[in-house]
Image (cartoon, rainbow, N blue to C red; front, side, top):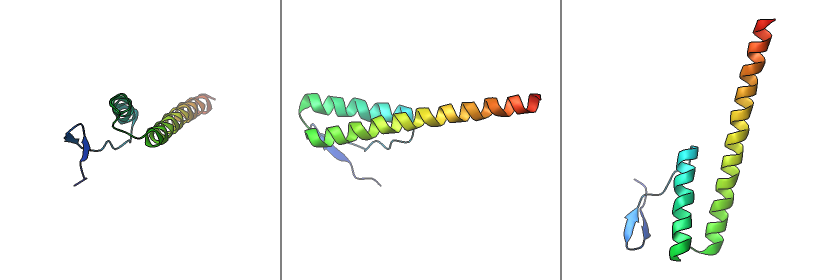
Length: 78
């Protein structure tokens, strides 16, 4: 089982980022921790940078999948 992280006197499980919903959840948690002063600035910047890259890659993948689907439909139509 994953180790729980201590934040504001209570424990929460770490967020495993594997989709945009979990990315948003971690981003929101980081913003909250920045406001509370419970996270180091360097760590927050690193995590937000990683989340930004994750979102970018997800959008690119989604675009590629849609484009491939359209190309396939066009080729089948000819």
